[in-house]
Each structure stands twice: as structure tokens, then as C-alpha cells.
Length: 165
Image 1 (cartoon, rainbow, N blue to C red):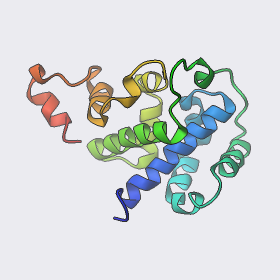
Image 2 (tube, rainbow, N blue to C red):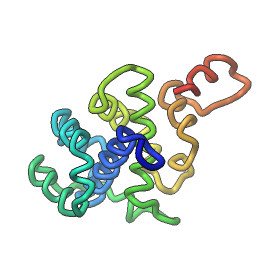
Image 3 (cartoon, helix red, strand yellow):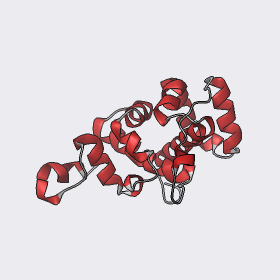
């Protein structure tokens, strides 16, 4: 481990931050960008994140926008934000923790976990910057993904088991 994150966590953080950056630039929902990029490109970005990380994120994003032929959409949650706007790195961190939790719990590859996270109902909640969901704890977001509800200590052992992700 180098720094505060493992190499895997850092690579997923970069991947998710890049997805967020591309989504904002092209005004697309995050699931649309992930689906347009596809599993092979997502795997490629993940595997070379340490290389891409040393380049300007705007250039990297532009290259993948062109490569995947991502057209401009009409989803602009940045413009709709009424309060303090989270950065693409802020949201990348939220998604990266969810992707890592899914990959670990389901014992699946990062690119598959990424597809699951971004194509879930939780993605709509994370992308609403006018609510507090995106800055909830990573455990609560993962619980919401798996259970459809945040942590409630009165619900017992099942929630405690999920908190171990």
C-alpha cells in the first residue's frame, strides 16, 4: 500500500472520478457513460489508472469520449445543484467505495462491479446533489444497494454482516 489507499482502491478511485468527469462533460447519466465505455474499456482504464492518473484528466476524458463516441446528452445535475457542488473527485470517491464493496462481497471483477454500481437504483441517489445521500457513510450506501434501506441497528444481524464489506 502506498499512501492512504491500496493500489487497487486508488485505481478504482481514478476510474470512478474519470467516469464522473466524462459524465459532467457530456451531460450524460453515469450509467449511460459506463454502458457506452463498456466492460473492456473500463477494465483497461482500471488496469492503467496509474499511467492515466499522471496525465491531465480533461485530456484523458476527451480521448475516451471520442473513442467510445459518447454524444452530448441532456442530464445536467451540475446545473441543477442548488448547494455546494461536489467535485468529480468527491463523487468518484463515493462510487469507488461502492464498487469495491460490490467486488469484494460478490467476488467479481472491478469492471463487473462498476457496471452493477452505476446501473443500480443507488446511482440515481448518488447523482442527486441536492440531497445528502452522496455524503452518507460508505457502509450505508452499500447497505442501501443491497437492502434498499440504510443501516438501522434495530434490524439486527443481517445489517451487521453487510457492514463488514
